[in-house]
Image 1 (tube, rainbow, N blue to C red):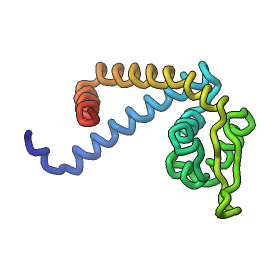
Image 2 (image 1 turned 60 degrees about the vertical axis):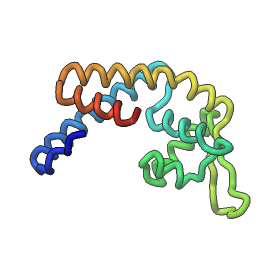
Image 3 (image 1 turned 45 degrees about the vertical axis):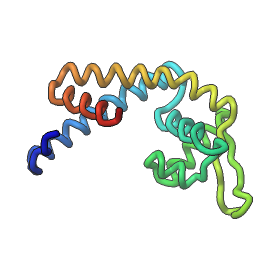
Image 4 (image 1 turned 90 degrees about the horizontal axis):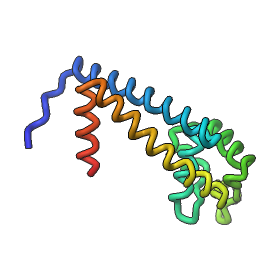
Length: 149
């Protein structure tokens, strides 16, 4: 195994700029595909994913906000949309009546399951396209894939 290259602020700035551009491109494609094919926003899809994978299919609102990288106000609006669609419901914490849980419904699990293939196919296609267009990004993507096994 070779030693990593020494830190270089300018090189790091270029790398970070490329990663941000890649992130924006991929997020845009994911959002478009999920909205067109399943009527779901990207944050809604991810929220359903966190809930589907959580113990008992429920999370405290603040834990969901943290997982999504959203503030409390944004996650409240997101959960309201999911509730209105029948994908989740709100439940009070039995130990702390001020605590609110968001719980995924069977309809929410089904919608997430239906959208998952679209998400994964679109993600892979976007990464492959970026890797093919820019050799440096191709190497970065390949390295990330190898490191995550």
